[in-house]
Image (tube, rainbow, N blue to C red; front, top):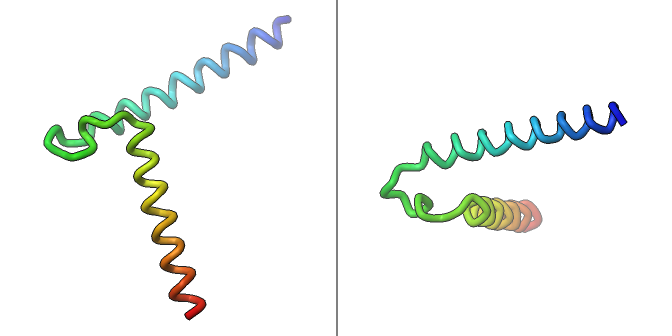
Length: 64
């Protein structure tokens, strides 16, 4: 029981740290930037899509 509570507490602390880092990241975005009005998940989706596009271009250039 005590180990379960300790594990739960550590998980909550970790999640809180992640959310604080996300908030810090979001605050660094200038208010006039296109991403300023988007939520974090939308920004991550755009970044991942851009990275996947770059990866595909790199693969095509390598195999050409």
